[in-house]
Length: 249
Image 1 (tube, rainbow, N blue to C red):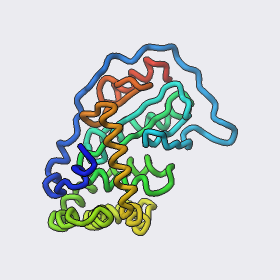
Image 2 (cartoon, rainbow, N blue to C red):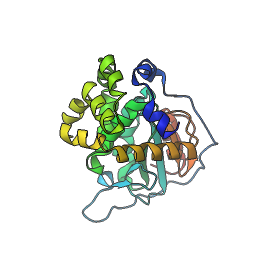
Image 3 (cartoon, helix red, strand yellow):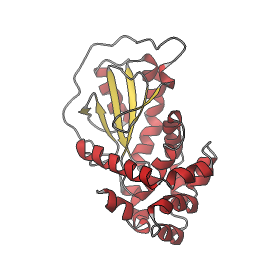
Image 4 (cartoon, rainbow, N blue to C red):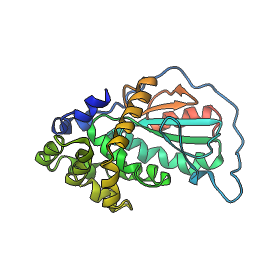
């Protein structure tokens, strides 16, 4: 989907489609190579890998050892129910068990299925880089509440879709309750409005997301890669089995 196409899509028409927009079917390029258990790698003195956050050249947000031998990447949409399920079942284990060892890093990259995803990504990436993944997890943990806001004022959402880009997404966040949702989690409404009103920032975000999705042939969310190789399946038990097969413990 091109930048201009995504930014001009009718918002109202997309609302009923969001629950079915993501794909939890497995997409594979072959099994992840097996490896021996990899010993833990100590973090630099005074630090820990679970609090280490890097913004990658691909535009993703990575937690853990930047040089971890096992680099797990998730392509995800914030309006994807299967992504929300993974955020509840898999991400806590990744962050609490695997990332602290220094053996596994976890990078989250955006996929935009609709303009709502643009708004939410714009807000999750608005503050400190350390807050991006926690804010994303808050969205997925409360997806029913988020959807209620997105679908609760269709006339106002439709009107927002007609505004210039430097107004559209901030107004959309206002009328759907997203500014309030994020403000309750530490990102002020004024800060959110400022980020969403930066047209150049929004256009760059959409363009980069489109480029990476095309490059890695993303057709559904979530989609996982380990060390650049597409993984089998989307359920956490399948992802964890492949991580362990590759040497994570």
